[in-house]
Length: 206
Image (cartoon, rainbow, N blue to C red; front, side, top):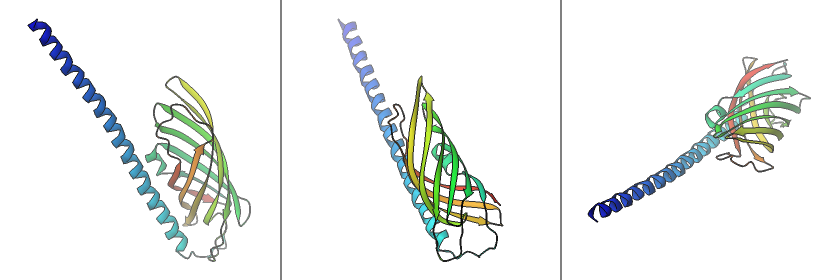
């Protein structure tokens, strides 16, 4: 009887330990998600401030215009995705982009996406022409997700606001904010943030 009581006591303590461990894991995950949201909000504020600041600075009017640019999002790498964007000038006010994304920060899934966007460049009175200055427009892409024995395809739509600054007649600096969401739900895709924010760096040419 004593041995049975001792065994029952050990079992109760073991169950209690397992229960506490499960709660610790849940609390840790909640804290992790909370911190990630805080980081995203801070980066959103920083990028939005950068766009407003850049757009308020008068630019030197150049005779040269740029017809092409290619850039990558350096902030996006911290948020779990690699972005590469090519932009082509259509007129002084319009352009289109073609881009590709690799998502690696949403375990157990990874994703590949390809899409396009259209941009309108705003006349701020400082002589900017595409591909320079403040612009906005819609985007759409298709993403292929896989991992953990799961495969899915999703359609994503959204929009962006960005300010492209070209320095030394070649170097692109482009803060960007926006949003994107999946039209169809993707099972197993946890922690996907619909907010786009980052700073692209790249190269522009004629």
